[in-house]
Length: 309
Image 1 (tube, one colour):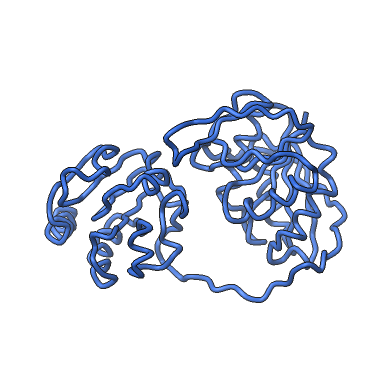
Image 2 (cartoon, helix red, strand yellow):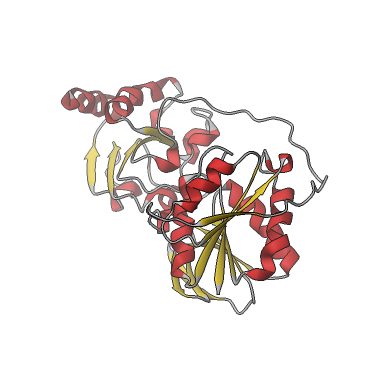
């Protein structure tokens, strides 16, 4: 029994989400192999080889993998799939783009967003916006699984796996890379941040979100938002935290002017410490908050910044 983890990377470094996925793969039992499909991605393969619990790293290097096109990466996975009992990828945009294609071609049911491994064929995953946990058993010969990264710790360093180059599949020709618009930010990346300051509809405007910046600067925090704030056009889409946004589990999550709709709670309730600031003491956010401040955010936030010195 051997598990294959599809590495998420940028051709230069391994993404943290891959380390969470390696932990999940190890819990399924058996050896763990990591597939790095990229262009000039030897550094990524070397980094994967140093992760504890990894038995082998497979490097498929080719220009057709430079931009992570799902059609090409999926074909590379399918070329070696028969050797594995489990195929896993993080439940990020990258993993969610590739694995459904793999599952369809293998004619197996994908198991999405797992948060726990009960046994090699039984897994737990949240349903109903995290209000219930489904236990799913798969009898498929190859289990195709996406991993909710907040459910597993990152695998540690200390491995010394061999890196093996494998033949790269040809470009599928089904899609081509046109361009990428990357948001530039000096703040930590939202899903990897240890502290997040999030604003909601209660902020009132995009201009008002600037009141959160000094707080985020003091704490070296990432900035997030509820869907209501994103839909209102206050902030960009990539700030969205929630069921249809990014799932986060930082050490500290500060929710400002967020009422706490169930979809938002599903994306952040695994945070270690939650602080809520809202003028409505009946707001649902207080039901998950460790610390709550009932008050006007336009008075509380500046005072908080002042107290932080």
